[in-house]
Image 1 (tube, rainbow, N blue to C red):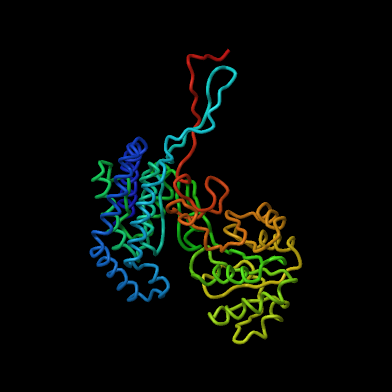
Image 2 (image 1 turned 120 degrees about the horizontal axis):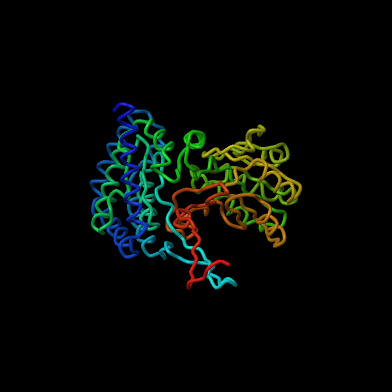
Amino acid sequence: MTAADLQATVAHLGVAARAAATVMAAASTAAKNAALLALARRLREDRAALQAANAQDLEAARASGLAEPMVDRLKLTDKVIETVAEGCEQIAAMPDPIGEITNLRRRPTGISVGQMRVPLGVFGMIYESRPNVTIEAASLAIKSGNACILRGGSEAIRSNLALWQCVQAALAEAGLPPDAVQLIQTTDRAAVGHLIASPEAVDVIIPRGGKGLIERISREAKVPVIKHLDGNCHVYVDESADLALAVKVTDNAKTQKYSPCNAAESLLVHAAIAPRFLPAIGAIFAAKGVEMRCEPRAAAILQDVAGAKVVPAAQSDWGEEYLAPIISVKVVDSLDEAIAHVNCHGSHHTDAILTDSHANAMRFLREVDSASVMVNASTRFADGFEYGLGAEIGISTDKFHARGPVGLEGLTSMKWIVLGQGEVRS
């Protein structure tokens, strides 16, 4: 496909998406829910065909030398398919945000002024590896009354095509335009450049993938971008923390799964509790093969833990997103120092304090400048599903327009409405 052909293809997708977005914005809740339930049913019914397409992607990925953790992200297992099907059903069961009127108040002139929630219009989704994102993006687009243009990674092209065909069939079954969810069917990377530079085609771009992808899109896009670059998430163990709780939560935040952006990458421990806490968590990390990159005080405590992998921390470790069994560890002398460290070195994604002090918990919640801030809970909860959003389109560390897990409301905007009975301005 020539550059001109590719640009024309993306432009055509944009025209079709704009037309579909107009219909979706006016679609009834019943029709949108019918499409979601039909999609859930089709995913289950077509599981064998979906997994056959996925098997081709897995074979090609291994043949090309793709790292096994990345291959694992590609898999459409029975569990993955059931999870996305359940996600569609959960979104169908959620209240429809579109058309909701809030803050309606009467003015002295007699008019009533409020705000109505409306779709963004068309969003472009650019993502890597996980083909389940195709369904997550599609289902959120349908319920929020938007249209979307999807561009998955080349390594999942067959899986994404098979999933997208389920989406289009479900939309048609519900009487909604199949063009409400479109997939860029070429693996040519130039298609991404055309999409992110096309404000006439899309209203916002949502990248979901590695830091390199997101940096490129943020740099080159000519439309707004909802993004997060990385997830350097912190756990701070306060001096008043319950020791057993702190060990359990820290272990989960780091080791429940290493690859997600909400896994803990940095551990801060108050000096008063460090002699008791660090040997306990160090033994768990040693048993699980987690490397600890430590400043001198933490290293002095941890070096006597049997089997512990203790490495001196470099300055770069404080800002690193490892996505691996590695964690940076630092002993701090105060809550002030912990908050300053998080705000300086963190990525403003998710950070947690483990403490029995209400005052310290409230200070951490107020003063840590992150999209999600937690008290006595694992950072792994920073997720649209866990927050009750049904599914998420991604996690945003921006402050405008959405922050944190982006679900249905993150794909909407508010417009002002005025209700009158013939009032005129004097």
